[in-house]
Structure formats: structure tokens, C-alpha cells
Amino acid sequence: MPRTDETHLDDLRDAYRDNDTAEGVTPPRRRKRKEPQLASELKPLEFLRYCWRQLTSMRTALFLLMLLAVAAVPGSTFPQQNNNPTAVAQWEVDHPTAYPWVERLQGFHVYSSVWFSAVYLLLFISLVGCVLPRAGVHLKALRSRPPRTPSRLERLPEHRGSTVGSTPEEVLDAARTVLAKRHFRVDRREGSVAAEKGHHRESGNLLFHLSLVGLLLSVASSSLFSYSGQRLVTVGGTMVGTTFDSFSGGVGTSEDDVPPFTLSLDSMDVSFEAQQTSQIGEPRTFAANVTLTDEPGATPKQETIKVNHPAKVGQTQISLSGNGYAPVIVVRDGKGDVVADGPTPFLPQTANYDSTGVVKVPDAVDANGAPVQLAVQGVFLPTATTDAAGTPVSKFPDTVNPVLIAKVWTGDLGIDSGVAQNVYTLDTSAMTQVVGDDGQAVALQMRPGTTVQLPNGLGSVEFQGIERFASLDVRSTPGQSAALVFALLATLGLILSLFLPRRRVWVKAVRSGESGAAGTVVTVGGLARGNDAGLAEEVDGVLARLREVLGEPEPPGESPADPPVGDHEPSVHAPEETP
Image (cartoon, rainbow, N blue to C red; front, side, top):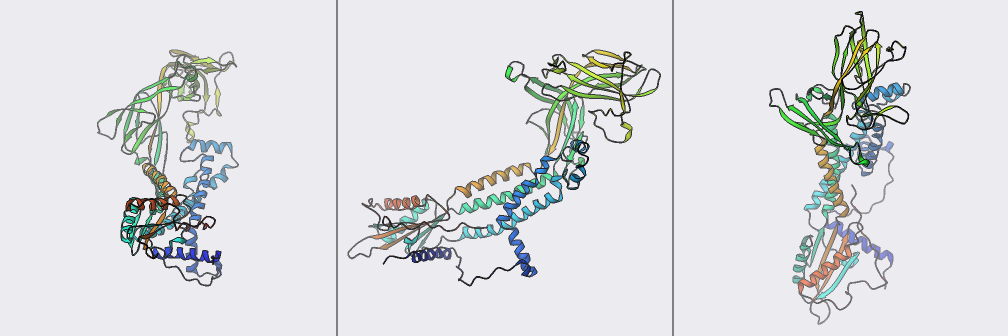
């Protein structure tokens, strides 16, 4: 009498219950399902356990990971105080109404804000609480024996059978050898061999999640203990490790943590493409030759700092982040005294190094001896020309036709106000542009070696020559290497968890029960955790290799244990492990 669908499904459930029992997990007895309690009906301890289970679920961890990515968006939308305080100050000027609200919401301190830190910590706790229990269960499974052989292998989704002339003992010995060579963990039992492989699929899953925890710790340590400082140094100038134009550090760092090195910029090697029309003006050489002393009293050493090739002082890197021109400008006051002398960095504004800068002179006097504050604000063009509108521009970044175009201002520089100022810009709100005898504003246009006399007895301006400068970035990120290692481990774990199959194979051998027949009936059954398209090929391969080892000829027809055509059993797989 054919089996009904309900009878067949009951048989399959019995097979999987046998599997679970074989792994040391006793199937629970069926009991009447209780109605779930509302959170408000739970006792305090039960409520805490409920909250902990919700927090450490994989669903919550994925949600917190997505929330962390969303929370990081304002960090790229608004300028951050620790990285670019000048941009924050400018944002306040441009958005006076919105600025107080963004400041209250910590929009300029996103990565150290309360709400970002809360999401970060919750994600860390969720991952740890989710992964550690699974790690304990997995270690126990690695030490356990393969599951015992089900009573009827024909119930399994994949099974094959054959009759061989060898004895059951010979068949089982051969099966043990075959399965071991196919990288199974093998356990010889009474009348059968049980084998299992693919435990490292779960190992890869745990490695991925543990690496995420390590990545979070690395990023946190980098945020707490990293620092970055910037300094602009002209050729011939010297930088001491504790003096910066701008500095940003984590909660646990300050400028005192920077090594006390000394760096002198000896020369700059910069060249640009001048031959290929399609790439004309592209940089070809970009290097700074420096003399570096790691600490006071140490022996100086010569270093060449290039792009992606920084100098190192301990764990601190000194990188080359930019370069430009520093025109040597000499300013004399009305008495003929030199009140400003030396290279003045002009910051590049375009790819052709159209550069802007300012020379501020707070302590000058005019021809009558009256104190006056001067400022020379200009644009330096390495290769001067004019565009279609007649505006002076540079057409090439190298100094082929250098020209300095400048305006002169007098008035209050604001230096005595006590407010910090940007040395590369000029606030002209309290200043007046100098005009000549013709009533027109004075516009200086000078080449190297040119001197221009200022009207009204204010003195003179001389353009002596051109130097170069280098923008140096001093940085320490202690968690950077660890973050890279954990990212690679997470990738490895993800590959193992996605592509390593989890399979169980059993081989059963019993003497043939037919009257007068000699030989052994061999049955091979396979079971996979999740969908596994290669399970059938694995079972076929085990049976074929087993016959080959036993020296058995290929069977003439279909295996007696194979189901007849038109009566295929549904493919049922054991459920995936849940966190």
C-alpha cells in the first residue's frame, strides 16, 4: 500500500530527529504552546533577559550596523571641528541661523557625539553578545563525534545503493578510507560509517563576526589615540614636531604626544609634463628633500619624502600633502627700514598654480614717522598670460613667466583684537586700498627683481625672487594596521561561510538477505545543511570510489536503492544554524 504524504513527512521528521540526537541534542517533547507574554507582564529580571535577547539577536546587530552607516552621513555633510576648524567658522558665517541648531545636535562633532557613540557601543555589545555564545557551541560541535547513522538511509534526500561481493567489514574499512581522503571527519560504528565535513563554514561565519568586533575596536582606538597636524614649511625653513599650523587629535591625545623631532626642508623636486598635449601641466616629480632629527641629540639623517612614501619617526608618519610657491617679498616703510623680508607662501587655487597670499606689516611708519599698518595682497602667476576676457591667469604650473600682481591696503589689520586670524587671507573690512596721485587704486605688477615705490610716503615693495614650500602632514593612526588585518580576516570568513558546504554522509553495509546470495548490500546516504546542489554528486562520488577501492565492476543498471522514475521524494534540508 503506498504511503500517504503525511506518513512520508513523519518519516523525514524522524530522520532529522535522529540527526539532532546524534549531535548530542535531545529533541524536546512536544508540549502545549504557551501564549507569549506582553513585556509589561514580565517580572523585572525576565524583562532584562528579554531586552538582552533582543539586543544580541542578529537582526538587531544588522539594524544597528545600518543605523551606524546612516549616522555617519552628517559627518560628510557638515565640516568637522577636529579636522577643519576654518571651514566650521566659515559655515557659521554663511549660515548664522542654522549654525546654533547644528551645534546643539553636535553636527560639527559627529564622530564623538553622544548619539553616534551610543549606536557604536550598542553595535559592539550586540555583536559580542551574539558571537560569544555561538563560539562556545561551535567549539563543542568541533569536538563532538559525527552524528550516528539514521535507521533508514532511504529517507534522506540523497541516497544510493549497490550490492558488492566483499564482506561488510571490508566495505566499512574501505568506506572509512574513502571518506577520510574526501576530507570528512569519520567515525566507525557498528555496521556503518558516519562522516561529516564543513564545520569550518560556521568557523568562517564566526570569524567574520569576530573580525567585525575587532574592526570596531580598531576604529575606536584610532579615534581615541590618533592625531594629525599640518605645517607649511618653505625651503630653508625648519619645523619642530610640536608646532603646527593646525592640529586635531583624539580624546586621549594632545600635541605633547607628538615626538620631538626636527625637520629642515633642504630643497623641493617638482616637475610638470610639458610635452604631451593631452597631459600638459600634470605633475611628474613631487618630492621634498629634508634633514630629519628624531629627537634632541640624535644624529640627523637625510630623507626624501614623496607621495605615498612618508618619513617615519617611531609610529608617526610625515607625509607630503602639497606644495606651492613662496615669493620673496621685501617691504620697506617710509623711513626706508625693512619691515618685512622673506618668502611668503601663496596658496595654489588652480591646477596651473594661480596662487593667492598676503604680506601683513603691523609696525611700519610713513615718511612723517606716523605709525601705519600695511598689507600687500596679491596673486602669483607662475606662467602669466591673459584669458579671453583679458584677465591675468597662469597657463602652466611651472615658473616660465612669473608675475606678481598685488594691491596695497592700509588701516587696522585686526591683529590687536585678540581674535585668531588666518595668515593667508586678509580682512579688509577696516582697511582702505592705497590710491595713487591720479586717484586710481594702486595695482602692482612685478617680475622677480622689480621694486615699486608706494605713494603717500608709505615706502616700497620689492619682489626679489621665488622659493618653494611644502605642506607636511604629521599623522599617527595606531589602529590602522589592525583595522586592515581585521578587514582581511572578515573577508576570509565571509568567503568560508558562503562557499564551504556542510555535508553529512553515512555508509551502511549489511549482508545480502536473499536466499543463496553472497555479498553485501551497501547504502550511501547524504544530508546537507541548507541548499547544496553538489550533495548528489558527493554521494555518487563516494559510492563510485568505494566500488573502485573494493575492485567491484560497474553495476549494469540502476542502483536498487534509487527511487523509481515518477516517484521522487521532495528535497528536504536541515535548517541553517541561527545565532
